[in-house]
Image (cartoon, rainbow, N blue to C red; front, side):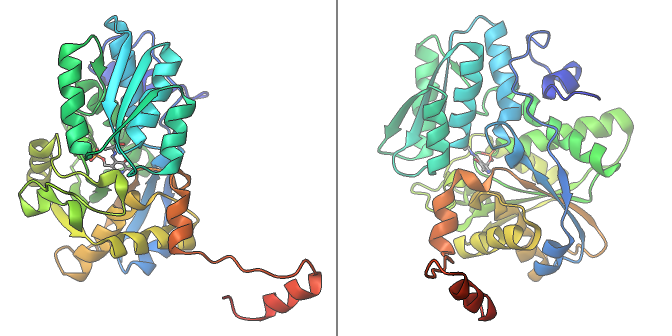
Length: 355
Ligand code: F0G
């Protein structure tokens, strides 16, 4: 295709939404699948690893695929306003697509638990940003009730159009590889994305007869309801995007895991941040901390002997851009060295070992 015009232009005929003839788009999707041999070695995976770099979407996360679909569908249905709860990325994405559609947007976020770049986006795109003293899960309950009682469309991943949009990433991976990967790894929060990928792969399988990948999901240890099989009342993790204790698409996540003979693991914050640093330092691919949970999950599953990836093809979804959360990068790895403003001092420093 000569010009990329977004996922509805490319895949709209396979998306069950209204308004595909008049898409609200920012030319999202078409993100690169980047081979990552150095990272695969550093993580000890023994596989052919590819990174689906979803941080390169217009607002910096995978949410844009679902949001173009949800806002297009809402507009076609005559809606004037959208609402969502968010750990940040959904908020920024909803705000941007609402702006583009000329719609109002209200976003509800857990106070103090959202990364700066996400908040900056939501504010810049002109949403009403409302913080609550409560978790994402409580915010989601509130916006569900509000959308039942006020003329406003809910654009969290409970909205079917969101899943229809996000499933397109599975097709892009198959197109880029020329085959279905053996494994797909991704972080799991509210479980919309795992639901969407599985729908995409299943539809590809039904259309072509090609195989299905196995799915590896990863949750943060302090926010791992699906792994431990019970709601987490007070989820905690420094990977704030996936700080969720009661996923809305829990049962669909279980279905994807079961049908794909997949795995779901809890990974600690240290394991997440380690994988986060490694992706940037070994491959130059900077994602946000939560995005690296899938990589941490792969490493852990191999170490524990739960899976064997030797000779396999693996796609890991890096869901959001590292620049969303600059303070995480600087907090955990503040490697700024100082010299006087003299070239001699710089050359001296360069001869020594890094600090
Ligand atoms: N990675 C990032 C960067 C996210 O922002 C999210 C979810 C996930 C992974 C998990 O995806 O919820 O579909 O399982 N962020 C939502 C938000 C909750 O509000 O931005 P999921």
